Image (cartoon, rainbow, N blue to C red; front, side, top):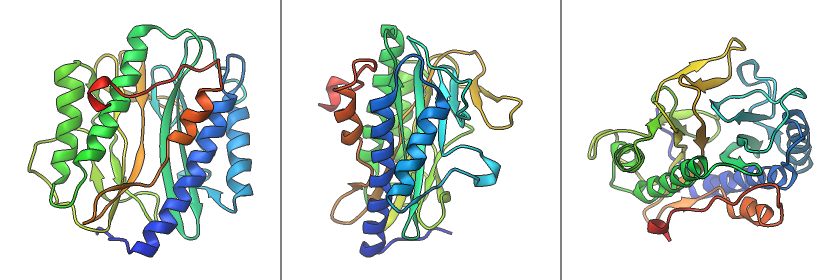
Length: 273
């Protein structure tokens, strides 16, 4: 069942997502070669709790971290550990959730560390751009298939990257994962109609190579089957009659990246400028 949110609930969701993006901004300020997943996870959890929130992911179905930290060919759900040491040339996808005032926030960002190849930087730019194309399609009167269609058209047909099928976006609210599912592929005009008050997390997960994925023996970490790099960006958005509102704020992250010489800035492609 889809739960449509009131204006008051959407404001609470915005506050939860603000905490998430503050945590991701802190991560963006810290990331460098030599730091570990455990270190950024600890710092993010402290910030979330300092804001009166709790980490949405920690303990969720047994997940041990406050962040999902996925490196290079890892798509999502990577477990942050002290042995997960970042190196020059890595791309690090960080997914974060926070629960505040009865509602969850959820957002993700991929950080290229040091000297990342242009081929992989292009993957990050295209994936990030596809997120904003998807947000533009999330308007009252459109259908879920319209969101997936614009991502698939852009990512697969224009760039021949692989869009992960097994993992999708989702509704978000009092529960971390609510109906409806929001695939990053689909047909225009298909699927449920987008109505006023819908809040969804849109999150393209894009592989440099093929779309197929596998799960590690830890039961969590999803990786590209061909072991090619993968990028992941996510926004939580509210669909309203007056226009779609992006509840998460990646500008907070981007401000920190401008000050961190260890991480390359990933913007959107020129067609979105």
